[in-house]
Image (cartoon, rainbow, N blue to C red; front, side):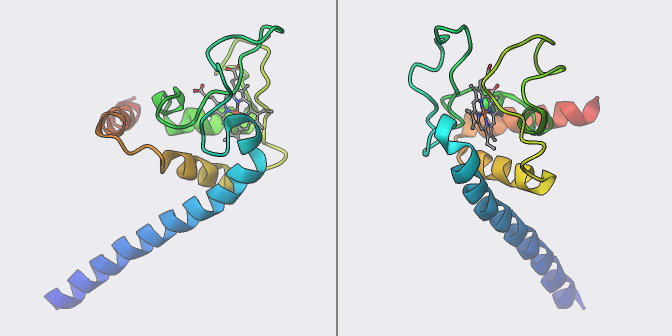
Length: 140
Ligand code: HEC
């Protein structure tokens, strides 16, 4: 009895892992096709990404740990990817080159591309900061 319970628990953990791996794999394809042109094939962002372009807009930031993507909770990253930099993520008349993907990608693809991006965040500081962010978001 105890053994079969342990086995069932192990299978649950494994299938959760499988789902995560599947999402990251799908996300890798979505990223290459929809994000890499601006955010870089290796998530490195555009050169000099902190300096505004001549038209006043910002270049695409990196999505690896050197950028600030990881400072935002999952829901915010999802909202920005789906709707672009519009309220509540930016002021109403904010001008940005970040497209809204609502008409192009389904919700599942957006979560997958975020899972792919997040799979590059591995340092302890970043993981701890994100765990804290998730705890705070749940408390609200
Ligand atoms: C046409 C170029 C372009 C493409 C394609 C693009 N982005 Fe962006 N993205 C930008 C720019 C430019 C910014 C910075 C906008 C700003 O701050 O004004 C940005 C910002 C972001 C941010 C906010 C990051 C932060 O730290 O505030 C996220 C999240 C994001 N992009 C996700 C994605 C994802 C996911 C894809 C692919 C599905 C994608 N982007 C495709 C140009 C692009």
